[in-house]
Image: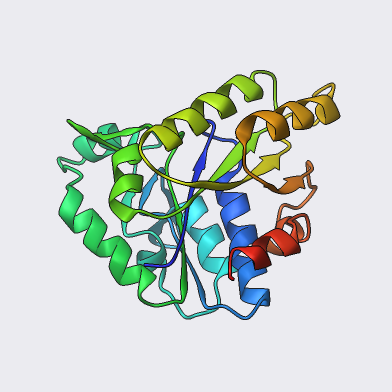
Length: 228
């Protein structure tokens, strides 16, 4: 499998927006990009269907004919940690079927963009978490850093955990979660110095965070460098 595992410094810091932006950007570079959110917790009943907002966003960003089920193989109703959401439905997240579903969706494109859930270490079942999933997929990792107070600590700890598992942190994207965050430039400088990986872009607080708008904030040269 060729592609990237997109993780984040926390939940609700813009991983899906960035993954959609990366999908749009790599598609513009001529690749068949396949966005995949293997685990999605939280659904709304819309027009007779249970849908997940993140899966919808990624599905809208792709252009290779994936179905919502191929973008989001495992979707649960409750908006909570995935292992809890699964248990509420009497289900268990099983490693092998999960990996098989991801690989089947990835095979539809040339470049898989696999988005994790929450931060880097979110439990999926006893003894298996999203860090283990990243190791199983063996993809280079992109870290989405939600710019808000505390982000430097969260980012450095996440990078340390990623590398401790033998994974390559190939890049990071700063996403402006707190529109009024002071000293943004200084925070970006500290992240640049501490993460030891190139910044793929800084996404400001956008009025409409569409895939195209996020893609416009990404560093095209950095993305091209990954394709060499």
